[in-house]
Image (cartoon, rainbow, N blue to C red; front, side):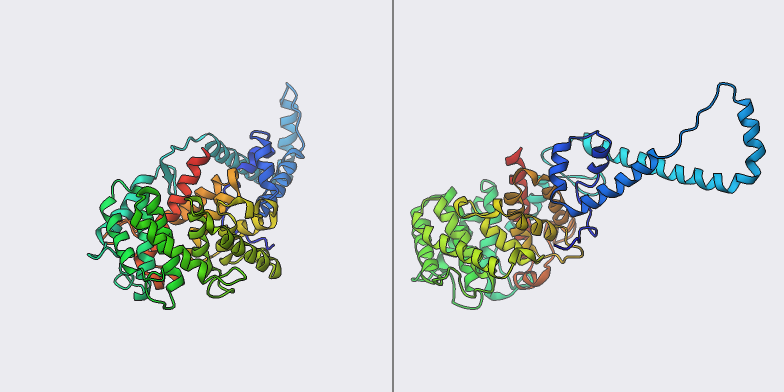
Length: 423
């Protein structure tokens, strides 16, 4: 795997000094060092620095300083340049040591409030609820009269309105008490779009995205509002998903994981909520992904599609997961997380947040904070678009502002719930 971590600083970097000086727990940092190439390099550099400092000769001074001082004064003119350079180097090294120790002190002892996310300097804090409420307020305010969210109105393509509506509904349902009216209006719209064969909307180029997302959104709605109307709709939607699945396990195009990911997500969520007949389709899809990963050395490449693949393998149906047994996948995800100069793509951020939290389990808090910062720094803070995220990447140009805002919000909700679940 390529060592491409230097463009982005690893959250563990400042722990290295404390580890070398014996001031921090060795077990946690040693486990991290096994996986992080960036920190391994920092460890070697810092060990060399400490070695050079300790190798400096100590000077023994007598109680009577006069003879020594007279001797030094006599030789000062000859050694002035050499001693000045040596002293400058000593001061630089000492300053570096002090700097690392100070950074370590503040990082190690600073208490982070549970409901606070940090932006930039420690003094700049913003409530998590405030971040989410701003985005949800904008979504609720801009719902269309028919209950949908228009992709085309906000910079996307018309054919994706059903999928964008499903994403907005998924975002709002996390705060179902505050936005109950919007939620029910949204699911009424989705129910009206379902055909007799179970498909949501027309069978256009976007139908797999639209159908998988709409099914997932209604499943989440059913988990909170278990009405018979939603159940009948979900029954038909799941039957449609199973009916169009390729015998090998994929949907639409075997080379495009994103076409299949929402179908598998919907099936797994349905299985958890009681639709046990979804198990065979889930198994076929994950076995297909495993075979593809093995055939193409999928996990050996740092590519954004890894996020969707890892997401499928990290779904709650653990008996099909191979992630805990494959460190190569962990290394690849870590490289993807710190990939230098990567472009913002909220679609992959959403799946990456799921995968990072599930794959790294209790070790993921530093990654969670890193991803939070990446997402938060892109939120619009003022004007008519306050609380939204600008459309970015290929998917952003297709789904528009509603899509980008919903996906960023869902990603933050994933990270936040995962972090406090571990707490």
